[in-house]
Image (cartoon, rainbow, N blue to C red; front, top):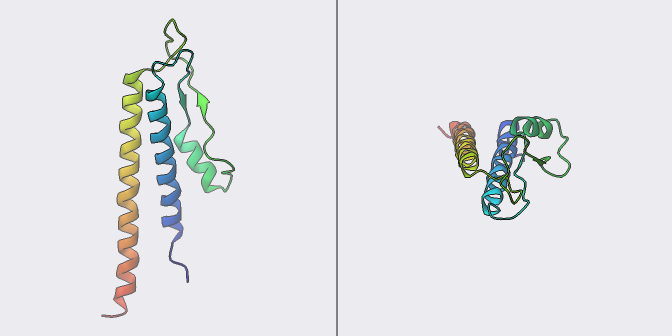
Length: 116
């Protein structure tokens, strides 16, 4: 018996990506004092589309972010940028969580409709 829907599967992948983005942002923040560290990121929308197409082989394709100002030690982590990235990732996660709750609520309503 299938206990998931296509939408709940997609939302699960969405939440996994949002979690990956939160972890990557936290890693960038943790490395703010690491000499030579380069800020890492991935394109959320592109990675989600890749996963939807079944092309997710080993998680998101993470790359160094270009165009950031590097300090004399070569580190280019900006706490302002990372704070914004963290807020965006949190909002994505919360939205996915609410959509998943709604999807499960709809499934439960359909199950209980037969008993009424």
